[in-house]
Image 1 (cartoon, helix red, strand yellow):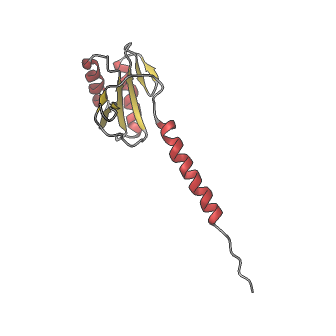
Image 2: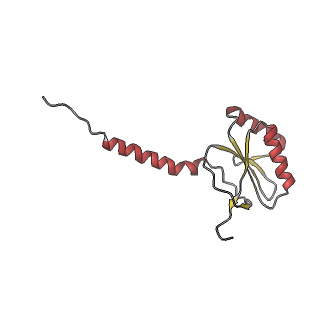
Image 3: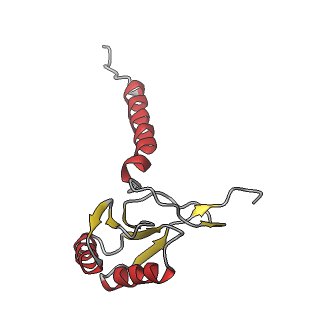
Length: 131
């Protein structure tokens, strides 16, 4: 009597290809980088891409939360509190143009802290080797 066998190799190959496609596309979908900002350069390492909340402060003093314009710091704090209710350990990334006042960036960091952010980072651009 013959036993039935199913070849699972093609199904496993398709699964691995789907995982690779998701790994390539995920960083493009998850980043909030619509608004062009020239962040300062540093000698830091690149971080892993994860789901985060992005606060952007442009040279012309526009304030954005996840690429959606926010009128002022009070509204930023309110919207950030709503984002942090879902996950208080989400990383809050502050993307500020290098030409803005440092006191404004400190105000944004303080607002994020008041809103309940437990993990806050400032976005920078890695200096190319040899500079």
